[in-house]
Length: 315
Ligand SMILES: Cc1cc2nc3c(=O)[nH]c(=O)nc-3n(C[C@H](O)[C@H](O)[C@H](O)COP(=O)(O)OP(=O)(O)OC[C@H]3O[C@@H](n4cnc5c(N)ncnc54)[C@H](O)[C@@H]3O)c2cc1C
Image 1: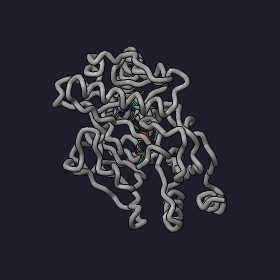
Image 2: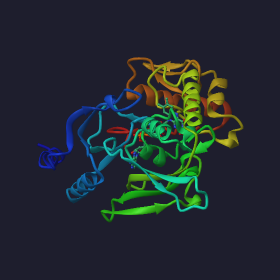
Image 3: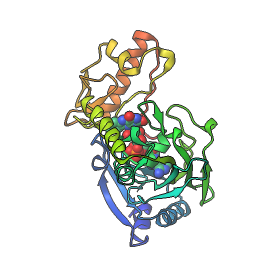
């Protein structure tokens, strides 16, 4: 029996552990082979205990939020997968601010953005409306510095509680603008695990918040975001190119182009969709094809924002 499986079988019995779990069930692209061992801790303490145990046994891991920016390889993930979605508490605290209407929202990293939007509506909390309809978790959104309708997560971030996997200790990161940029966060490739995010919000009108949330969700539906499995925009935009990546891909004549079951969405050049039977390889090949075709035609090097992981993709 392999070491990781042995560790899992002897680990805290309260934690949910699945073996040979298809990652296609946990990614919005609906592709990907099995995770050898899939852990879903309920609490920050369980997650810390798990990370310590894995480190002591020299086992590496992959942190999974909502799987909405991921392509997991067809061969699957041999590292431990730690899913954060059960760590999803949301609390409000008063903000240490001059405005009486300010407040802070502290949420577990696995909180789904949909649940955050519903919480804001129910509690008349304003500030996160543009993120309504964003798939995935707040932990993933912080990691990616998700950007929706001209607002990035860094625009509303106060602090992050994270597990420093080098020291095995939790620490608080206080927002510092210099650490952030378009789709860049200081957590990327750090190996650290985001446990909780605290967001700057304010009191608002429940009706207006609800109306705004619905507006953004409807806009995404109109743009075809949820018609087929995908991971949203595939390539980052680059101001230096003068046009959004989607337009550049359209102009290269690639709209509707497909490899296997992966297709450039006929209605959006920067979306790749799974038309039903795509493999991770189809998506990977299509990303490569687009990158090369655009480079040949324009000289621009598109940079993918989606993350490829798993056996064969991990370097
Ligand atoms: C239909 C659709 C529309 C989309 N629209 C947008 C959009 O408008 N703007 C935008 O920016 N993105 C968009 N996306 C992409 C995606 O939703 C975001 O990037 C999202 O923030 C990813 O969150 P997640 O929880 O799903 O992360 P995952 O896909 O699970 O993970 C993404 C990365 O974050 C890391 N990660 C996740 N959680 C943690 C944690 N707790 N600690 C450390 N690392 C972690 C993972 O290891 C991985 O490297 C869209 C996707 C879809 C499917």
